[in-house]
Image (cartoon, rainbow, N blue to C red; front, side):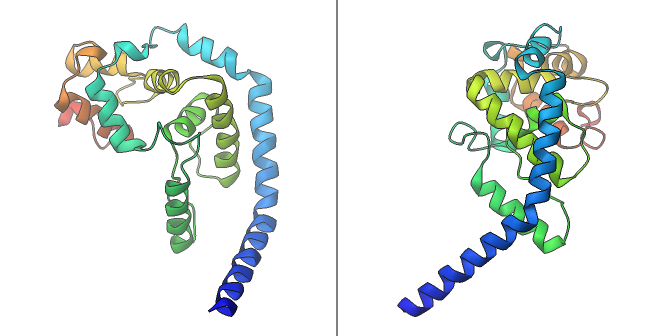
Length: 202
């Protein structure tokens, strides 16, 4: 039993080393991408830009029902993890290995905010790594509630609606703090594919 355990441990170590060697160029590219992004506009300046826009909605002005629907759909362990969710990440890696390409990201809300703030939506490993570097910075600089309000103010809901304030007004002629269960579910669904799950057609 001990021999088997040692062999499995040795195999795991080899896999980690090989994965590290293979990932090293992507990590380097991702870090360079991250440095260029925050060099062009520091995170604090980018956040202030979002907060000064008419789309910005403070956390306390967003319906708790909407927040709950968002977390259930996008990031169930948001308040437990620090920028990256290891469980979702392992699941995503397994899916990607199975398909032989990047089909699932396992992104947390903080990572999605980082992407919306700085990066394109192109599925590239180096972009995902750059996103992680920004996400760690965001988690160090802001509270979870602040991150949620920033994400909700920047997310795209279709029909040229950026932010939950614009989406609530456009689709339902209401304010973000008044969103009910059905409206919240429809808007959260729209986040996944705005052209497919358009609240106007639901």
